[in-house]
Image (cartoon, rainbow, N blue to C red; front, side, top):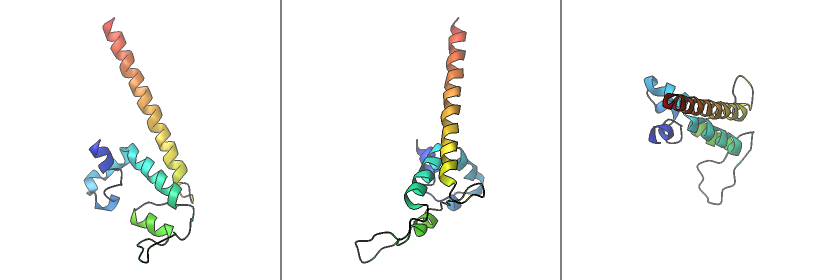
Length: 112
């Protein structure tokens, strides 16, 4: 649980992770779900944010995205990050289901 959350980008930005460990962020399903959620909330040129206090750190949605090190663009398409993240999460779902099926099938065959 902890490495998955650590490499999702929620606690640590991508740039602060050492170069030899950055590849782990690409195999973390939590990264894609977190990025998709952030893009859904603050993406699509949402505009200025409401602030009830006099002092606000983030007044614009683009400021939130840049502070969290999330880009809206993917595959050279503007605003396609949320669709890319959804597709990768679907691939994770299918791959994990197939892996579980093959392991269970192997276990059943080994008992015969």
